[in-house]
Length: 413
Image 1 (spheres, rainbow, N blue to C red):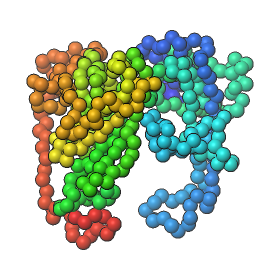
Image 2 (tube, rainbow, N blue to C red; image 1 turned 135 degrees about the vertical axis):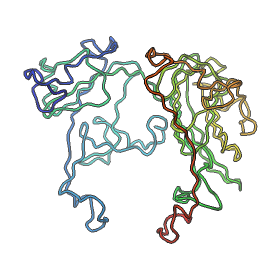
Image 3 (cartoon, rainbow, N blue to C red; image 1 turned 90 degrees about the vertical axis):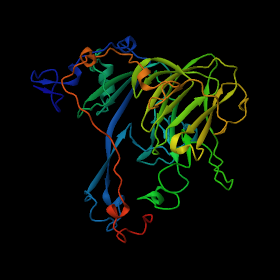
Image 4 (cartoon, one colour; image 1 turned 60 degrees about the horizontal axis):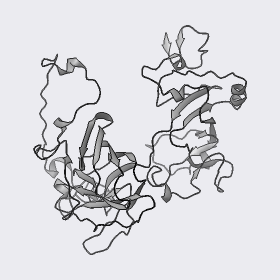
């Protein structure tokens, strides 16, 4: 018995179990089980073949690179080769050129023959959507004649395969307002190659020069020069509840503390795992951590500061970044003075799961799982117990690097 075989007849072969025969183990949104959805898309999948001489210049690549085959294929959806946008679609769509974002009904003028752009579909919030990925242009006609089967209680998946000359049907509820995402990252004024493999003098270590919020923010160097980049603006309506997703994409070792002026943060998930709602005023996060929180936009309509401050190793440099929470139709200039590192927005209750000062902060031991926990895990006695010490090993540069053996495009040791 084979699960998810390729190239078989799922209806007539008892020895094979296709994904379409599996049933979901969790409740399914009733709107996705109805005969019809709010929106429906037929999207052909395919490939475009290129001759390698049209893509590569001969004798220009080092021999350690893989040999180039006689032809190269590029995958297409709806006849379009996907191209990554120059800025994040979720948070900075206004920064993307208008001829970069496309779909089959709205192709940019630069498309002649093979088209490459950022292929997108737009759904109204909370709508039900059916997408039929097809490897045959006759599938739509087949569907109109009742020839396409749908599994109303099928499993949820984040990947799928389209059979040769076949189709795959997926349904989603468009209930994720993606504009309420906060991605924070660190930024260096110099190129990263100047920090690799490391310096022994001058600017050393990996402490950032500043932070960015959704790719935006200002940097002022000691001479007073600034990047003069506008702050990120997150727009909300008055008297609503919004779910935000905070993603810490730091490379630096510093924690970052996020606070939204005048608004409490009700934390409902950490690293994708739901927790019992915990109300705080600021969240301290480390590299790789994610937090989901709710804010109520019940303040006087206006503009409010969002402040991100670097802690611990970043404290000495006073690293911070700002953004703005903007109420729709309200004045765009915050009513309060721009906060600084030394004069920040008042903190109140702080969530800091890695803090050693749990008397004044909410540490990880105060959070509670919102899902049922395996009772065996909660028992005093377990099958196995391991103690793993963690520490740091220090090396002298001479133990790791051999002088005069590095190409000159790397920074000096």
